[in-house]
Image (cartoon, rainbow, N blue to C red; front, side, top):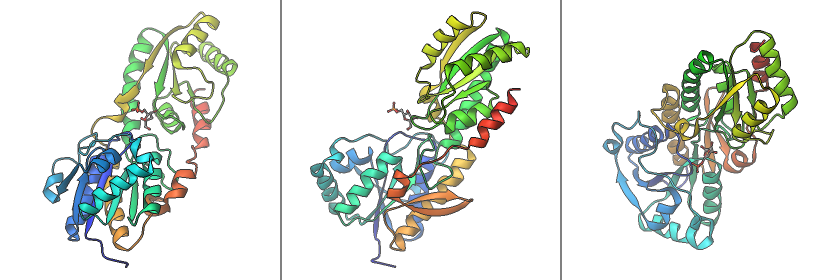
Length: 328
Ligand code: F6P
């Protein structure tokens, strides 16, 4: 155990994700349990620069385990990218007596935390919070499971209208650089095809697959498209392309968008957040710094922040095959 930690700052940064509040609650309550003071930083790095802090205790996080979004708010900060901005943030933290911090967010959040802790004497632990699940060192990021359930529920509803009208739907789901959401939601909702950034299905194969499903007697179809899909066409362009080349289809488009980021966290995300918060605080107490807390083989594990950022979170290729078989 290195120098004892007396006061921790916790904040959320980047895109919000369900489970962030449950993680804040866990960090605050773990601090209370170990008699460590804790402050919340509003609006991520931007609020850190401005000194927007709030004292927190076990009671200030009541009734938030079930809430989506983040009570500490979130922001993307250009100023924190500059040395001057980071110096100002450090001075604010020192003035408040903070001697360690827990950063809840995605790779942008961790990059900021890593640079900050290399410049200043400030131990840091990361908790991965993003619906995209695009962080190396954890099988699940906070919010991912909830987003999958939200996606499947929405697609189930769209299926009702697709099947009533014999339509083909292109449904866009989030996931900027990775296809985790598209792939899992696609299999879970029984989609005809799944277009993801990792695989180039190709337009010809897509048409062939849609023709095949028509021939096999299917009257409606759902194609899930990840935002960053490799075919390079957005859902509206895909609709136009298919309408031009497969006249027999009546095509509609639905972009699920930010609804996937909201809502009450699933039980899985609440439990994960609770475990991660405990692990983050207790790791700081053990003198560890510059790690991200993750879930690996159902155990809490620490991954160095630089690896978490640079490493690639791989999609499960087996799911692609499962999806192919399921669309027979
Ligand atoms: O990283 C999470 C995410 O929701 C992505 O899936 C999406 O591309 C992006 O954030 C949207 O960001 P914003 O809310 O800034 O539009």
